[in-house]
Length: 116
Length: 111
Image: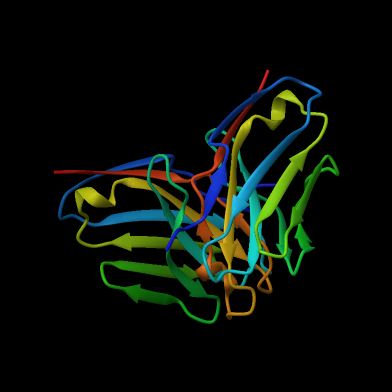
C-alpha cells in the first residue's frame, strides 16, 4: 500500500515563473491538504481539497491555487513565483469524515522548490 | 502569526532518561492538539493527540499533558530511545479545521 507520493522531489525555477506540484494520496483517503514549510519553520497550511473543491484556505495569496481530480489526486499551482516561495511543499492526505481528520493525516516527503 | 510556539529548537537527552518537549499557544479557540514526528527526508507522522476536554493522554512511552489555563502542552517520552531522535512538531486545531504548527524541536537521544 503506497503512502502519499509527491512529484517532483526537487525543482528550480526563476522569479516570475509558474510551477505545478503533484500529489497522490494514500489509498482510501479522500482529502488532500497542502502545506508550505520554510527553512527552520513548521508547516503552514495553504489549503485543503475535498470532493474536488477547496474547503479551507490558509493565509496565502491567490497566486497559490489548486485542484483535486476525481481519483483524489491533487495539484498545487503557484504563479508569479517570488524568492520567498522557496520552501518545502508538503502534501497530506486524510479521511474527511472520520472524527478528528488530523489524526488520519499522512504526509508525503515533500517537493523542495528553489526560486532563483 | 505565531499562534503555536516551540521555544526550544533542540533538546539532547541520554538514552533511558525522560524527554520533555514543550509547546505554547495563544489562541484560546484551539480545542485539539497533536504532536507529529519527522525524520529527515520524510514527511511528518502523527504521534499522539489530546482534546481540550482532557489534561492527559498516554500511548505507550508517549504522554501528552495539556494545561489549558497556561495555554501550554508538553510531550513526555519515557524512556527515551536513540530511535526517538527526530524533529517533533506541536500542532493545534479549532473546530476540526486546519492545523497551526510550531517551528519544531529537534530531539537527540544519545546512547
